Amino acid sequence: MSHFVLPPAAPTVLDVAGGGLFPIRRVFCVGRNYAAHAREMGGNPDREPPFFFTKPADAISSAPTIPYPPATRDLHHEGELVVAIGAGGADIAQERALDHVFGYTVGVDLTRRDLQSALRKEGRPWDMAKGFDFAGPCGILRPAADIGHPSKGAITLSVNGVQKQAGDLADMVWSVPEIVAILSGLVALAPGDLIFTGTPEGVGPLARGDRVEVRAAGIGGHVFTLR
Image (cartoon, rainbow, N blue to C red; front, side):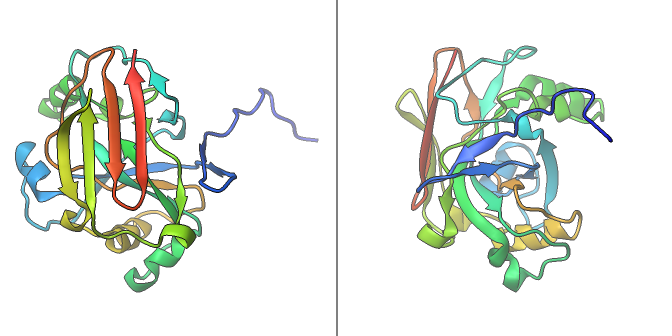
């Protein structure tokens, strides 16, 4: 009989509003999905095909306090709407994409910006700039059955009570149905997948001791402190 040669890792989960746990399988992220943010990062704000990168599933955390990561002196915040996939599929039609969404939360795509910039200049992958431990703080997951599918409304991020990022979900270059449809043409989506949908302008540095709060209208918020 086959057996595990090591104890299997405990699944990474998010709390679900109303009860229950959502097990996380994979984490996909959309790059430069707000035109103003594309400009501030030196990119093209036009409606070009979206690009994706990933984070490890165990980079997701809902802990109220997380450590400042090693190997950086320029950690940046990127507040985002996060989509949780409840029904898998490949080549999902855009008009049916929302049927595959379990719910929504907010998250922060923490980025070691100095490392990312150095790797980009060398033409090397920047996985380690995005995929480190605790690199994806997330809030409680709200089922679409309860809140619907928010497509507009404010999304903000504050540091120590001072607003740093402000946008509207309606400003996304690629909408949630479009993102789900396009991504499912690249990989077969599965229950438990998360999609970070991009960040509005105003990304910037964080320091130890900072209190970060990200919020989205109709979804709620998440607060954490860096130690």
